[in-house]
Length: 372
Ligand code: NAD
Image (cartoon, rainbow, N blue to C red):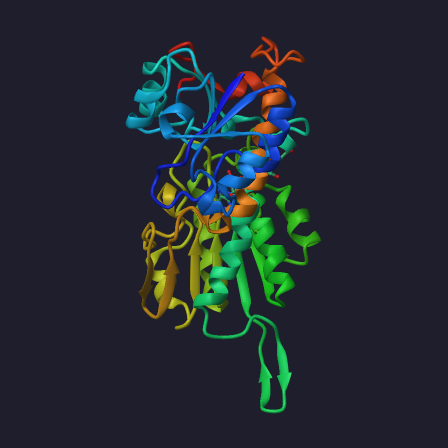
């Protein structure tokens, strides 16, 4: 196939959908690969390395005008105008945004939104949410260290003892668990909360203490189990008890990292403004859910602000701050997905009965297939 790798155009998007490593594999498999000049520069993959891997360096037009286009983010209107009807697009395409899907369909594309893959063992190697959230969780802790005016580890020095930082992590999915592991490696004392009962064991296995909000009814317990590994919105009764406990833990905390999300919905509010006001001056909140409305209503997307002496870090797209590794993992996810839809002869041949392929297929030949 003719495969195109355009440079990402969204401001701040430093990642690229294919690296020289994955381009080499595509070329070895018999595909012709066009990489837009500079596509990998921000992720520190030079044009010369793509050329050595067998790609043809082109302009944006040629990369977008390919049979198969590999992207990180959903193409904007200008990019869509340069793509050809009937082309196949792969990327993180926001499967819950119906207007965005309609625009892809309007361009006549067949599109796979990789975020929609099921959370199953077979899908693990192509799971873009996991690969990127893992890096985001790590980076969130490092950002916290940057804005926190004290040490993370306990330290005994000739000039006196410094106490270990107390870190609270809200949401113990992929990002939250990586944040726990990273904060523990730096010597912090870590507590974490999640709605899903399975999270307790995972938090404890990483050396964190689980903030337990017991279920009081069968309904609460059933909803907390989630669906397909994902959380569902919890009843107001449970949320109120969680809020009280979280407020108490936050008052004792130095750092709070929030990662709580519910697919297709605004992020749940977990930290109220009065909790922020009650936190110690110098504390830091990193809100990884900020792009979906935030777990704290005070955090501002793309900004680092201070309220009542507390620093609120609302920086978005943390994986893009680790663009080299984020791209390497994303590109391998893409390659693994392609193995499902390209046959041994190198032709696009998606199987009709594959659960991963069908979950990700959001548009086919110009029709939206998914109700967002
Ligand atoms: P996510 O990004 O959708 O949400 C982050 C976390 O926030 C989740 O753990 C969720 O339970 C939690 N959350 C939601 N509402 C909350 C609230 N009110 N209070 C506290 N926490 C709240 O989740 P994710 O990181 O993508 O992980 C989702 C699930 O998928 C997890 O169970 C994870 O273990 C599982 N998973 C499975 C695979 C696989 O088997 N292939 C791969 C990755 C993840």
